[in-house]
Length: 590
Image 1 (spheres, rainbow, N blue to C red):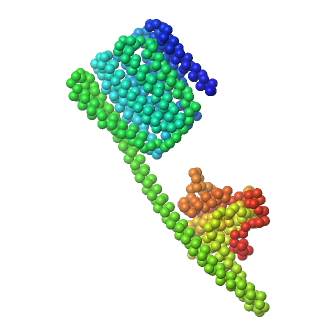
Image 2 (cartoon, one colour):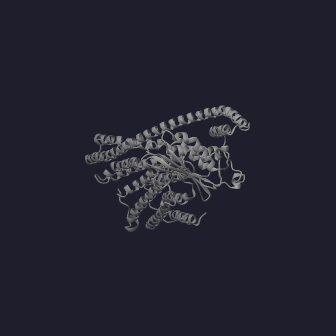
């Protein structure tokens, strides 16, 4: 057990034992009264000090948890203030506390922050509701509790002083407040998990002991058996020490927010606030129709009800205004989500079409490859049959074009084939040359000029050649598709080495000097604008690389693809055994 916990536990146990010893061994009189009041004051000071560390951000990083401990500390400060008023009369002035006692309002109010702390639901994560609406709901309930106390007890304390009626009414409203607190703690202790269930359960036990000891003390007062420092104060002292111990041991419990807030809790808090509003006319009718109520008390209660109606009505108006703004925000967000869903649906349809097209291309490529093989064989036979020089050159040209066509067909087959990723050492320049050949037909409608600058002596990269080909095609296609409004569109493709990475850069002649930004599939950075670009980002991230982009006026103007250099240990083969995904594609030029 940490030294701090031992120190606090020793202080609390010592004060409780001192109260027990004084109550059992000291006779009724001034000495017993003063000693008991000082012990209880010291106990409340220690309890308040035990709550203060929990309000720090370092101990309670979650906002709701901090609010919970701040409200609990406020409750302890009100309790300490009430004890200070009690000590003023019994310790300093050495006289009994007057009846009715104006400080009783502090005793009643010290439980209000506790109920507000429970209504915050610190054991649950924040939802998307506006926190200001929660604050107004809590303010409605707190205002109603204050109104209830003023309505029931204050008239017999100020308008028409009657100690007997005041005492009975105060005990009734205070008992109702404690019952509501116990019911709330029981519900939370049942619904919470982990450390929060332990905390709520401990608070429930301490509050039940405090409520029962108060009830017994009131019974003793009615039967004229109670006096300050009597044995009836022992359970009260134990309950205070118990509450302080909860604050001391809370640091050892797991008070993380376990689950998201359930709407039912917020709904019930709002319903209770509305019920409090609807109860005000009933209080006004009771004041008017209760014939035994003195006229000054009746008038006081009617005016108080009207004022409470105005104040709580203003809170409801503000709450509805916030709800209207939140509703507008949610509608706007739902429209955006619907538009995103439509875009995603269209992209999925396009992806399905491309997948079907890939299967069609694969089948067609196989069919085309067979006659090409025959043509290549016949051209080779013609070339070796001793033709005249002019006809020999024609046969060589036929063979060259057939080989070039077979290379393109092989590229189509490689692109359309769906195989698991096979990470090997790949020549990035060869993959890029193949990609440019496949995408060149897209340049003709826009008369796009391709400028290819391949770095010399580039090391191989660790990648899957088929997936890398797909990524290069898509990044180049993204830029070309945005050049439709440019007078003389140009696509620049460059490869180079940067430290342990091979960099492939795609940029248009509209590229600005703005910095590159990360394209990420997770949180942070710039997010891809399309489903296929998002897939490219995932492929590159799986390869240990990254994609950076530059956006100008909502259009992609440049991409920078960075891939790690292959090593002998990572590729499983020497760098000389580089995979060329297209056979002769690298030899045929760009």
